[in-house]
Every structure is written in structure tokens, then in C-alpha cells.
Length: 629
Ligand code: ADP
Ligand code: MG
Image (cartoon, rainbow, N blue to C red; front, side, top):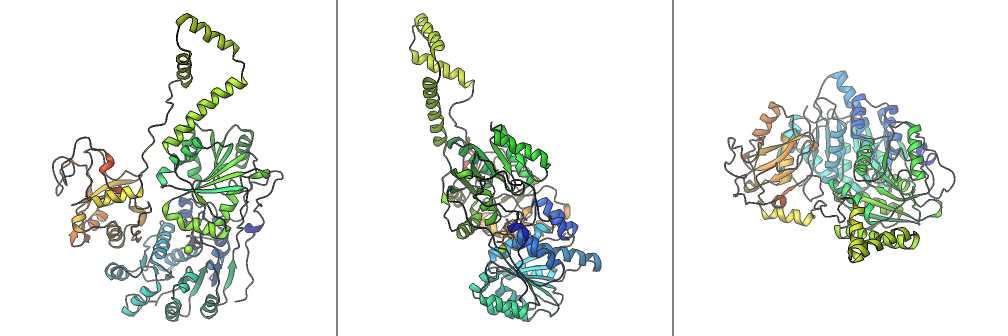
């Protein structure tokens, strides 16, 4: 219990402080990579696919300990990556165990989490790290939902069960959950769990687990009650505390902009139009995103370049020099690539993807406001990331003010202003005599109003580009989406697939709709719990009165489809099939124009459609990922 407090070196040594004004700091990466930590190759590959560049400090410290079989107490703030810190070693060991003993569906890992929401999140994370494991199942169990799917899930067997304490106890009592084969127990968000009054339940559960097991306890804080549990139920645990650097400089103005993922690029473009900035750093979460966002910004006329950990150091330095010299204005970077970057002219930091911990946030925004200058930091936040923002505000003890999405009117007002300013600058700063002579000659010859000539010259200078922005894509408000959903059926024009097509996904048709009271949560739940799909397999869902269109992987096998077809929601078989559009008239689907719930109205645009994305922050229930490979 009194093991030394462990502070991974990356936290302190390689971090720079925010007030540094000296010469360029190192951009060298340091600290171990995931590959250095001894993780199973299949899990490692999944992390690579997800795009995590390097372990966070808590991961770096606890993963090796947990892989070595130690009990661990991990203390780190919200958003520091604690889930992977316990899930990655758990999966590594499960994978290796399966190699040794062959597949087995008994429950070997139990994670206790305080709320349904957190249990789902943890289960989702497990699924994403386990994509390359065969015969792997994670099952979330929580109160407030029916027992049926959870019972059948448990009957089929799940190596990992993630549950809220109350519901886990219920299943233990019913005998649907057994700990005969249990090897690893995680108490996640332990402080929260105790705050919610689960202390007794947690102890009841722990007392029923086998003596020979490994226990990990993760928490943001360490109140005495948790220390007591650790003392009683953990065996000689190693205590790891990651203290983040959590002060932000006062000369940096911090704002956040709430935006859905697909609208981030538009938000970025508008921001660049309405505000004047010098050098800009845009932070994204993955290496692939650096290239993608830089490319899109270039396509919109900005001088942008990407830097990430895959780009050789020399090239990265060259790119940073270009930013310094003003040859490029925007650098799109990952945390690792921009570590310690010190470029005075950076006046804006955009957190295009929200950072995964407060420390990264502090580090990121510290790239601006250098050398005593003022800086701006803007954070793009999707609605479901609000908790991360709150964590940032809590730990930096500074509010981040909300900024509205710049409107088309804002953009155009800026353009008018810039137009006027350009004229003023030229009148004040340039020698106009030569051109003035030409214009006077023209007036004398053609007898036209000089304003007419000025307008003609403006047209020439625009060179065919539209002056005013007008075709900015509509940014639907959440309220509108909800209203559309409530309206019931919002038909649409006869063309096009309903849920916007996503990569690797196709649109499928299902025989349940509003009249079967098929809610998005029920559909997602059925497909994941009973259909064996992964949460991430499910794309856009569009529920209509008598049927539903849903985005699912375009490579579902015949067996998958067969299984999904038989699932019932409120007694109605899904009868799922590949959607072939409104006029296909396939068996079981309505014939005639449109999708048949209502005759299509001419000229009805996509406005009437009621589709939404699962991850758009609506208040729907999240997926319950479960896999059966
Ligand atoms: P915590 O439990 O500490 O509050 P989470 O485990 O929920 O934090 O992680 C917060 C976010 O950070 C998640 O979106 C997760 O995918 C992301 N994340 C975790 N580890 C890494 C990493 N090594 N690199 C990048 N992102 C990460
Ligand atoms: Mg957590």
C-alpha cells in the first residue's frame, strides 16, 4: 500500500512550460511507444488502427505493471486515457490465454463502472481495442433496461463483463453471472462509484470473487474510502499517480465552439474568414487526420501543411521553418509532432479534435501566446464531448467561453469590410497617379460615372470568383432534427439513399418503424446485443412509420444477415435486407413512388428527412457493443 508514487518521466521532463520564450524547444519525441510496453500484437495493431500515437502517461505507467500481473491503483484526471490503461493489458492477456488454452467464453474480466453511460463507453472501448481478437465478446450490463438481452448475452458467454454494481449483483443472485473463471477485476471511476453510494455493493461483489485474481482500481481522486477498499481488496498494489500540468497562460483567450464532426471543416473555414490570424496550429487526434485536414484546407485556398509522427524529423523541421517564415500559415499536427513547438507568429491554436487530457490541452494552447504576445485558442467540441471540456475547465480553473458558429452573414460582412479596407489601404499607401490618369482618360472618352468604372475594376479583380459566400452547407440545429424526428415521417424526394452513406457502409432496410415503436436505442441495442454487431458497425438510422433505413457494414455475410433478419423488436421481425432504393419494389417493401409511407411531393428536398447519426450527441442511448467473431 505504501509503494512509491510513480511519476512517469514524460510528464515532467519533456514537457515545456508555457512561458518559455527562449530558443526553439525540442520537437523530438520521447517516452515509450505502445510497442515498447509489451502489448499483444493484435491489440497493438488495433491501437494503430484507431490512431493513438503514443501511450498517455497513465497508460505508460500502468500497462506494464498490469501485464506483469501486479495489482494497481491508478490515479489520473478525467480524460487521461484510463480506460485503455486497464483494457489494453486485459485484452493482451485474454489473447495470450486463448492462444494457450483455446477459445473459452467464460467471464474472465469484470469491470465495475458507476453509470450505464460509463459502462457502455468502457464496453465500446474494449470492442475497439479487440477488433483483431477472435471469439471475443464484451457485454455491458446495467440497470434500467430489460434483463432479456443481458441474460441471453450472458448465456452465450462474454469474456468481459462491464457492469454497474447493482445490476452485477442482480445477475450474481440469479446465477446468470458466475465468477468461477474470473481473473481480473477493474474498479473504474472508483471515486464516482463511491460517491453514488455503491461502496457496499462493490464490497459485496469483490467478496464473491476468487482469491486468486488481479485487481485494478482507477480513479480521478483518492478519498479515504477508496484507500480503504484498496487496502482490503488489492494485493500489494503499485500506486501510480499522474499529475498533470494544469495551468494555462493568462494571455491566451480560450473559447469553444460546439460543432458536429462533419461540420468541423466548415467551422474551421468560417473561423479563418471572420478572424484575422497570423500563424495557426490545428490539432487533430490521428496522423491520418493531419493529412486529411491539411489537404482540405489547401483545397479551400489556405497555405496548410501536415506534421505527424510518421513524417521524418528533418521534413517536420522544414515544415515548421516554413510556418516560421510565413510560407505556410496553418500547421495541422498531432500532439506528438507539435511537442514543444515554439513559433512566435502562432496567434491561434485550434483544437479541431478535443485533446484526450487536460495536460495535452494546456500543452497545445501553450503553442500560442509566445514571447509575451496574446494568443487565441479555440476548441471544437461535439455535444458528447462536453464532459471533457468540463474536466479541462475544472483542472485549469479557467472558464472556456462559448463562441457561436460564424454565420454566412458574418463571413460576408468580413468580406465587405476587407474590400473597403483594401481600397482605403491603396488610396493611402500607393501611388495611384498612373492609374488615375488611365481612369480619367476613360471617363473623358466614354462619359461614364467613375463608380461604374470602379465596379468594373472590382469585377476584373475578382477574376470570376464569387464575392459573397452563399452556398455554405446548412448546419442543422439539434432542435430542428428533433422536431423532424417528432414530426413522424418526413418523406423525401425519390432520389438518393436515406442515411448519408459512410465509408464501408451500405444502407439496409428493416421491417420495423415508428408503428412498432422502434426507437433508435432499441434498434442499436438489438443489433449489438442479439445481432452480434459492434457499436461502430452501425451508421445513420432513419426511422419511418413502417420501416427503417440503417447504415451497416457493406460486407455483411449471408450468415450475419440471416441472423439479423430473425431479430425482433416489439414482436416484429426485422427482416433486414440491403436497401435498393425507393423504387426497387423488392419483396416486402412498398411499391410505387417514394418509400410509400406517403406519396412523395414534388420538389421536396432533403429537409423533410429525419435522419441522424448515432454519435451526434442526441439523447439517444448509446450502442451496446458486443462481438461474436
Ligand atoms: P478517462 O477514463 O481517464 O477519463 P478515457 O479512457 O475515457 O479517459 O479517454 C479519453 C479519450 O482519450 C478517449 O476518447 C480515448 O479514446 C482517448 N485516448 C485514450 N488513450 C489515448 C492515446 N494514447 N492517444 C490518443 N487518444 C487516447
Ligand atoms: Mg474513465
